[in-house]
Image (tube, rainbow, N blue to C red; front, side, top):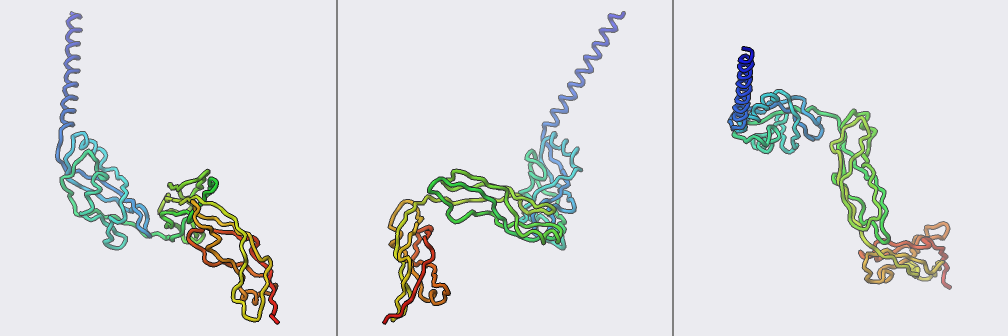
Length: 317
């Protein structure tokens, strides 16, 4: 008799396990099938509308008829009441009243997968637009300053300075705090042995107590190769009236030219160094700065040594 009871108990357990497996299989089969249903999500909008908070003060319900698997629809029912935060491009938000912005119907399709999922296919939206309220905030726009430490390879140099995009950032915060901020710095950009154009992304340093419209900026640096050539050139005279002899010392100066590579024309032939007599007349000491003329596009820079000469005017007899 006990042996028969054990046998019956075993059969009941086997039937129970078989039933559970059947239910699971039926459930999995039905979850894998596709259905068409109306689903809804609650969303907050995050955007960069100038002068407004970055997160909407309200959440909005977005409803759509979708075609999706039972798995997706089942999970959607479990999470549909929990709001999610969605990034919305400011260009896709239209002002429809004080503090109120909407995503027009024509822009809704591009956010379908963000609202719902790539696992679902849109049949149609159940509303014409989605509205959010963005409250105003105090703000000011300030320039971005790059913090850079650059070491170039020999005979290479920067050509035109660093370019930033964007080069300004909007700062949000208390008015008193905003008054203390006139620029935003990048994090340090350290480069060594640079001998070609460089570009990249760098984070912005938040000074604290404020919100920035951007977290990072793109930087680019044009680098060029150059050569240096030194020449001894004559100091010429300009605007000296008749009857006056202007003497300068020294009569020649050393000039170091920095020019683009490869070498073309002698840079000393395309530039004139001179002292202006009218400047001498306004000088109390007789010392004049050596000026230049006819600088060409082929020349990057030059240095003159010495930069100032002594002048003496004598009337001709």
